[in-house]
Length: 224
Image 1 (cartoon, helix red, strand yellow):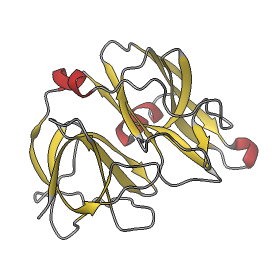
Image 2 (cartoon, helix red, strand yellow; image 1 turned 180 degrees about the vertical axis):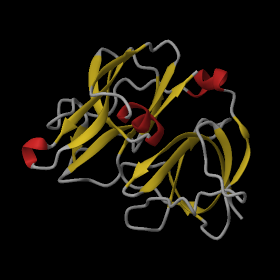
Image 3 (spheres, helix red, strand yellow; image 1 turned 90 degrees about the horizontal axis):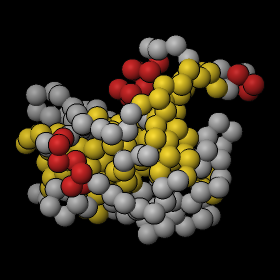
């Protein structure tokens, strides 16, 4: 049985399921396990350990896979073998996260904001670049914003976004990290500036377009 061993760097929301993504420790290669569903989302049952637990950030996980199944924008995708449980084999030392850091010049194409975001999407017909759809970065500044969005469209909902600078460019992206969302939705609406000395962000580009755009997300925030 083929397997991939990764450090879990994100366990984020994905269309009522989850998106797990991580890196192989030695090769530093990104791996994203996906299901055979059209949405490619992973269910909690599929990613559960034998004891019923599910992956946490920095878990070292052994994942049964069937084959490499890349898409144009997501070369990291591997189809899971859903007949076998995932296995936690350790925990990664968070003080060594710098060894897994990426250093892209930019976070994909810029200059295409959404209604509430900044540099948070790219048109469907633009090549995202090398098929790399996830990075682990350290931002130059970071503010978590909580606000009601969609009221003008009769669909008001509180939403959490991360506004940060990376290589002198500003990004305001939706947060899909459930723990981070919960932490800030329990606060009042507002902006919360964080020190970036001990923070890593896992940023991801969606693999399925929505209304002709691929969206960027903050899939996790890891404090060291």
